Length: 70
Image 1 (cartoon, rainbow, N blue to C red):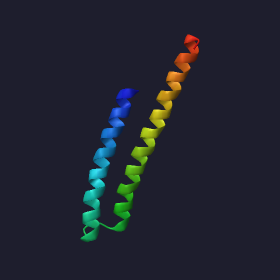
Image 2 (image 1 turned 135 degrees about the horizontal axis):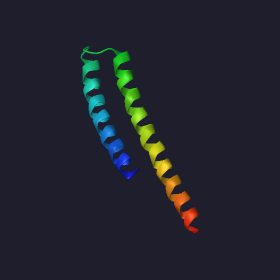
Image 3 (image 1 turned 60 degrees about the vertical axis):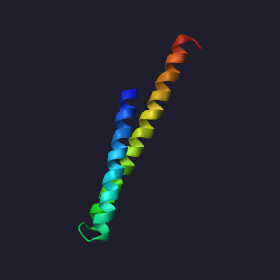
């Protein structure tokens, strides 16, 4: 689960780089606003995935503590 969080973090970093590139392309008329919004959506999906996995890890740790009797 923790490796998944690391992977999510790397994905977000890559998506942020793509967004910066897409912003420049949008300003120069290379891509459409629809294509830019698509990339932006991918970034938000990656961030949502990270948060979901953080909650799942916290839940798993909590369940483990309950099973241990703490």
